[in-house]
Image (cartoon, rainbow, N blue to C red; front, side, top):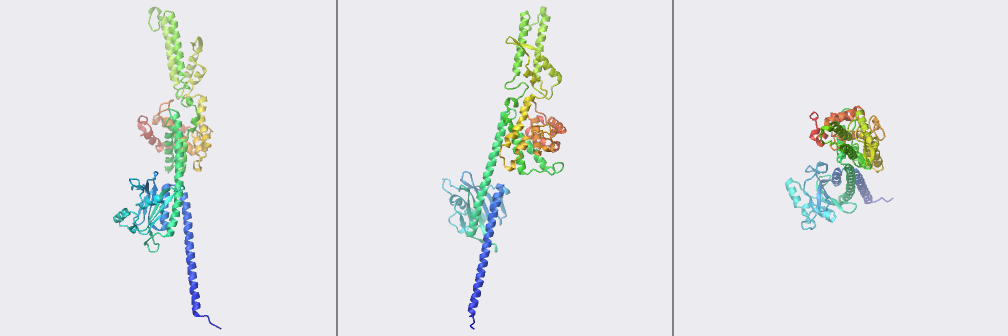
Length: 556
C-alpha cells in the first residue's frame, strides 16, 4: 500500500488553515459591516425622532465622531442668504471642548463663502465643500497644498494641539441644496490611539450619515417653520379680534401671559392640591394656544353689542334722542310761558308765581335728564327706586312733529332699567354665544395630536365650578383644569383692565376682593384662587401690566 507523501498532508493542512482564516475574516468583516449598517439605521431613526434642533445638531456630530472614532468635529450651517457658514457645533475630546447646541451659542465669526469681489472662496476647506458639494478627505492637513490651513496652524500653535487627518462632508437637503457642512478631525486607531487617515469605509458611512442628518434637520426646520407660521397666524387672529373693539386691544396677550404665570405656579407647587400636577412642554404650549384663541368666537358678535359702553348705546348712541326730547319739552314750556308774557329767564315781580312754576318745571326736566344720564352709564346694581323713577319719567310726554309721544319708548325703558352693567338679557345671551362659537370654530380645525384639547379648553373658559357658567353648564371636575386656569386669568384681566368702557379699572385690592367672592361662591376654582393669592401671581402680573395707581400699598 502506497503512503501519501508528507508534503501533501502539510499542504492540505495549510490550505485548510488559510481557508479557515479567510472564512473567519470574512465573517468578522460581514458581522462588522452589518453592525455598522444596524448602527446607521438606528442613528437615522434617532435623528428623525429628535424634536429639539439644538440637540439634533449635537447628535449629528456625536454620532459622526463615534462612527469614525474622531477626536474632534465641527458642524457648520449655511446662512439663509447662502453666503456664509455659521458655526453650529464644535467638539474636541483632547481639548475638552463642547460648544454650540445645548452648550450655548458660538460667537466665532462665520466662514465667508465668497470673497469681497464675489469670487467663490475655495481656499477654505469647509467653504469649498459647501460650494462644490464635494467630499474632502485629507490624510494630513500640514501636507495639503490645495487649501489654506493657516488658521489651523495658528490654532495648533496656541493650544498645543496637532491637527492631522480631516474629513469634510457637505450636507444636502431634499432639493439638493447644501444646508451645512460636517467636518471631522483626527480619526484615531482604536487599538493604539494614534491618529490615522479617514478610511474609505469611514468616508462612505459618514456620507450616508450626513445624508440622513440633512433630511432630519430639514424636516425639523420645516416643522419648526410650520409651527412658527401657525403660532404667528393664531396671534394675528387674536390681535384682529382684539382690535375689532377699541376697548380690548391688548386683552388676548394679557390673558395669555396671566394664564402661563398660573400654570408655572402650579408646576412649582410642592404641596397642596397641585403638588402632583406638572404640565410638560407640550401641555404648556397647548394651554398657551388655547389662551390665545379663547375669544375667537367674538368674531361673530356684532360690534354694537360687544362694545356697548352705555345702556342706550347701539348702532348709534340713543342718549342723544333723549337729550333732544328734553330740549323740545323745555322749549315748549318756555314758549307757553312767553305766550303768557312770562320770560322764564327773568324775574318779574308781577308774574313771580307763574315764573316760579315755569322754572320749577324746567328744573324738573333738568333733574330728570341728569338722572337718566347717570343711569345710562350702568353700574354694579340699580336699586328699585331708580327703576321706579325711570318708569315715572317714561310716563311723561313731549310734542314732536305735532304729536304727543312718551318721553321714553319701550326699548329705551328696557335698556335704562338694566339692573347691572349695560347689556339687556338678549344682548347678554349674544355675548355669551361667543364661547359656543369659539368651540364650534376651533373644533373644525385639524389640530395636531399635541394640540387636540385646544377647542375644549378655549370653549370652556366661561364655565363655573357651581354649574352656573356657559355654554354647557359644566361644573366641578367636569371642567378641565386648563379651562379653570384660563377662567381665572380672563376674569382677573377684565377686572383690572384699564380700557373697559362699562367700568373703571379696579385697584389690585378691589380686584382681589371680587375674585375672592367668586371663589367663595364657586364661580371659579378655589384652589387656583388660593395658589394665585398665596404665590402672589397677581403681584407679578400687576407690576408688569397695571398702572402704579392701581397697585395698593397693602399688596406690595
